[in-house]
Image 1 (cartoon, rainbow, N blue to C red):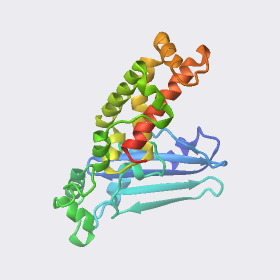
Image 2 (cartoon, rainbow, N blue to C red):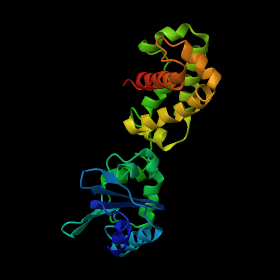
Image 3 (cartoon, one colour):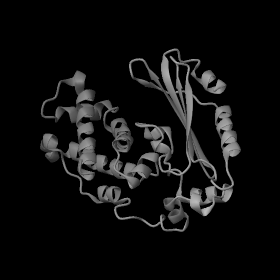
Image 4 (cartoon, rainbow, N blue to C red):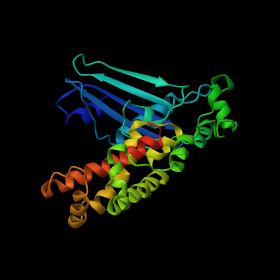
Length: 271
C-alpha cells in the first residue's frame, strides 16, 4: 500500500485507483489506472519495485495444492481511505483485458502465449482438482490447434480486393489519385502483415482499438509521401471535387487519404 501511495502522490486529482498484475510462467505485466472526479481516466508510471512486491506476494501466497494466482488487483478509494485486494486463481488471463479500453500500444496484446501456461504449471504445480478444465486442455495440446474462425478475419481482410469509397469514386479516373489508391492498398497490406500488438489481437478477434492502430500505421507513411511534399499535395488537391483552395490543400488531401484508409478498413473487416 505504501508503494501504491507513492505512485499516486504526483496525481492530485485521483479519486479511485486500480492496480492489476498478471503473472504466467516467466511472462508478466502490471497495469494501472486512476479515475478523476469527472470520470476521466489517468495512468501512472509504475516502478520496478512495485512489480517486485507483487511477485514476492505471489510467491508467498503460492500453495502446493492450489498453485499460484494468475492475476491480482488492488483497488484504492481516496475519500474513504479504503483499499481491497482480489485474486484470480482459475480464470485464464489476457494481458490486454486487464483493464477495459486499454490501448493496444500499452501492453502486449497476445500474451501470455499458450506455452507460458505449461511453464506456469511447472513452476507452481497444482493438484488435479485445482487445474481448470481449460488449462488442462491447453497443456495437453488441445488448446493450441487453431479453432474455427481463429485468424480468419484478418486473413479475409488481407485477401479482400480494395475498392473506392463511393464518396471518392470520381477520383478513380485520376492517374495521380490512382497512385494514391494503390499506395493505400500497399500500406494496408504492410500494416496487416506486420507483427504488432494490433495484428496479434486481430488474429484473435476483430477489435476496434486494433483497427484504429492498423489504420494509423497505414496512414502515417501515406501522409509523409503525398501531403508533406508540397507540390504533390497541391496537384492532388486540385483534382478533388470540391477543393478548398491552396491554403487548405494539406487538409483536403489528408481528409481524402483518411477516407480511403477508413473505407478499406471497413470493407476488409465488414464493418
